[in-house]
Length: 381
Image (cartoon, rainbow, N blue to C red; front, top):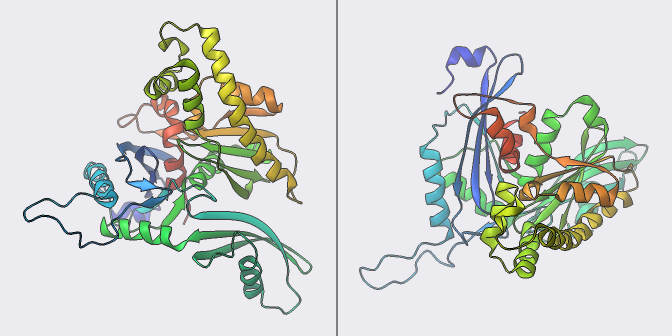
């Protein structure tokens, strides 16, 4: 139900997070009362049609004027299929015009359109800071691509040295998604990337003690993996690992155990190795460890990137999000290999849920699915 004028005057508001992932579109609505309390009012999802999104870009025909035989139906492209799925989801949820809507897309940081890094730049006294930052960033790969749209955030200034977080997004990716939401009649307050939704879900719900710990948050998706780092309670940087994903684990298990990918997903969903018939648990555990070893090499790569930053501190905590959070024994494996405290991202432990919509226990269990969308819905404006 839409909030009335009196409620908005009192300081109450609603925000919606929409996370478009590899397999599904996730929707979370959060109610914010005048005292800052947050309550999850709605959660929902709709499957993403196969092949409608590739590397973060909605698949469209080269031309709208595709010739077809007279009377024949025009074949649907990725835009048409995704549009239908999105319409099904939104028909189940009424959006008030005063609701802030933030959407994220599964393009991965550094993969498919978004690059993020921290740079230290010398800015002489009385120099044009903005111009120097942009020109310096544009002179360094991977920010030197002509199709990039650049933005930055100043982290600190010490003398003539300015530390900035630089973000570059592919113009084609931004155009693809902005046009999609415009055509669907959705007025976005922001367009984001799934890893940032996951990071915000942690920062918005973590305790002061948790925020003090230097933390790596790995978003292990179906086909991509990225990692974001939190230091001193604030965003530090993001990196993408091309070789790490849930598919890597699935392919290894399917090959070594001679089981279909669907059975691997069943293992993850039920958190139970016994769903594989006629295979000893010890054999499945050995196969899992072999798959984990390859994934671990990518996790180590991400950790080395962070440790090479001149202002980084030793990691104190690792959190796993995305589909990887549902893989049995993975958290314990990473903890044993790194010697670092490891857990899953689970913001629903700290946010109340409307019992008429979703049970708290169910939301916690599904946190790996809905955490990015919840993080988007808790953005401040």
